[in-house]
Length: 360
Ligand SMILES: Nc1ncnc2c1ncn2[C@@H]1O[C@H](COP(=O)(O)OP(=O)(O)O)[C@@H](O)[C@H]1O
Ligand SMILES: [Mg+2]
Image (cartoon, rainbow, N blue to C red; front, side, top):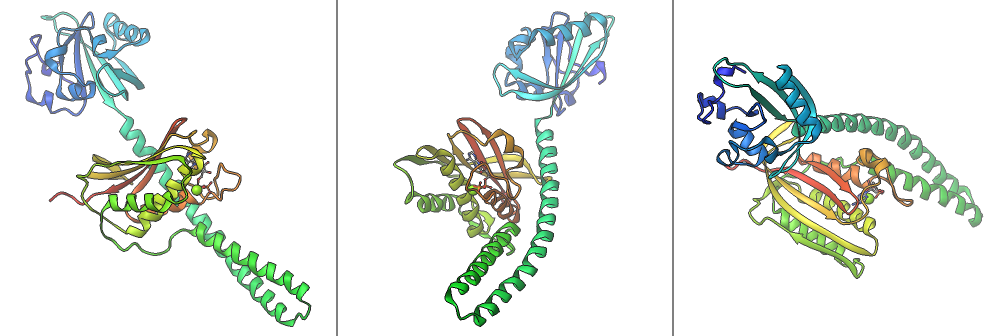
């Protein structure tokens, strides 16, 4: 960045593009007192320029001794500094992960100054992780399809042979064995079909997401233990989404059932809806996205399987099949959406993200 473009000491912007930068930029004096911040920095740090100019940087951003030392070092040694993936905590805004580029500024006419550029990288990291997950899921789906084919063909032969054998057997005790073979073959076929996931194309229609959430709530409320509550917290302004209603019902039902299983006899499941702005799903940026959240206050997804829960056959329960989440993910992806999970003990969120039609 050109030092001449930095605002002067009074905080007056010399160039208009200073505020058009998407990178947050701050300028401090030699004692880490803020001289100027641009608009992106105001947003990122949750502060207004008028309030912070003239105050210590540490009053806007939590500075540990390490970071303070590094900034002072850059200043005294007159040496630029790059810090990658540092977690920063503003005092009045949400914490974020950022790359920092710190450059001492030279100007014979002015005292020493430090230019700090902050690039928030949480969003980029999330996109990379999502990309990786999508690739892994595509591989896993291809393997599952191949395996399913290999299993289903001989299984059909096996079942047919058992049926023929049953016709030849007079002894009903022996026919019991063929019945077992047929029943188990059917069970395996069902399992393989479920592993393959939905094979119908979605029938897209305008869907009221709150009707879907309330429908699922109605479905599970009959089997709800006394101490398990399902509450709702909706944003009524969410418009209809273009989706297959039945697929959404099934996906959300799977998530709610998982939450119920995680909670056992007591706890709370909260169904929430919100609108997100400028959100990227599967590499595509959407202006508006509906987020349907199934939140529970249970123990959280076991850490050892947290990274893999959307893969088939990954389960943390003795009687689980590990198919609920991959099926739900498949259904939502067929509707151009995505399911994300954020989990810690006491708070687990499964978010169904669905692109909304643009507003025009
Ligand atoms: N809300 C939740 N809280 C805690 N763990 C969960 C939750 N949802 C899913 N899980 C974990 O993810 C695993 C995989 O879920 P799923 O694919 O539905 O298969 P299954 O329910 O058959 O085990 C579960 O076994 C459980 O360990
Ligand atoms: Mg399940």
